[in-house]
Image 1: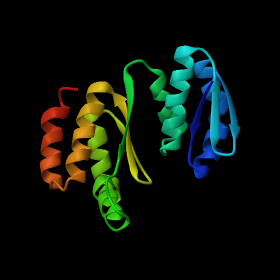
Image 2: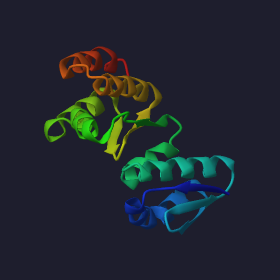
Image 3: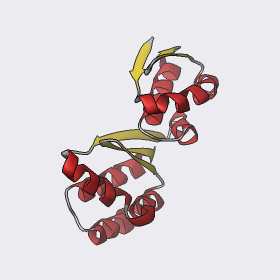
Length: 158
């Protein structure tokens, strides 16, 4: 049996998706406050844990369930910022009306979630690798134009 902690404001989302996750992964899920207990066999338990972590990082259940497909991966990156620069970095990652996030998703085939002090990526392994590099570039202060050029160059091969 494994346990996973998720933020309190994501417990309701998980509670609604628990039966679907159980059906897709063959595990049994129980909740106590914001701690989630997963009981099942090896692979199913591992996949359910990944899906629960993804939901805890702000992904909707439908997107988190992409992790049950063998070709997809989850990457969670901490945003290394103090409170005053956290808002600025999150804004850089999302972009005006979500433009930057959409561009990263388009060129990599991944989904991004900027939640709290993390940015999480779900998608094909190669796409996750390219998206992770683009996110790291933005966090380190690279101009958006340079990041978009990087994505056009490296994202097409995905």
